[in-house]
Length: 310
Image (cartoon, rainbow, N blue to C red; front, side):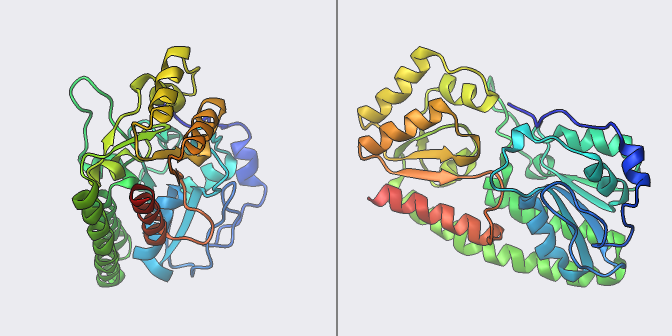
């Protein structure tokens, strides 16, 4: 798996001393995002991506001041380079949400340098309870698992309540409301599973596999192809031929493409799929502009259903 790019820890002291604001939501945010307009009493939360930042926002409401380190839908999270403002945000956080599983190791590294031992760190992979299969690798993209999202909301509510006990009931009500919104998504996945169980799909990399598995779909992608794309390494000619053969032979019913890590091999696969009438389903690793976690998952599940029905 590819971890995000190198952490830039130089000039941290200089940046911290150069007037970075103190008040919640008033100081400069991380690259690509800022803190909100929450009151100074709000619990400061830092999330590695806006996926987790949005869940924290839905649970915390205006009682949480949430900063998402990666929130640009055009940014490849694997190549993200953290900066001094990220470090500053982490140094002030009461709650930190990371993906874990090797996906966003820069958060742990920066948090150790920030010397903020009081921050409560929530690791989404640990919350999920998922482990690597025998002889395989962990699929760390757990935000595409609805059960994990629901558990994470509950865990965030507990952490916020610990930081602000007087608002604990509010946080837990918001977490229950978030979980209630997941129910229609689970139902939509169940309908796909009932209608298309065992249908073969291909993916450019393992990002959406928790979603496709929940829908009862079978991943037919050559492992060497998806692993090479995920690692950012060269796709071998044999793996490329196998992938294209799936598409020209129409042996899959859809191709799921991670739009944020496009490169020549994935672009060639996408063109081949379209040329052969195979529907292409785009997915991302961060929230698109104007969407929250629920609407994002709704749109993704619906796009997958339409592709399979076509």
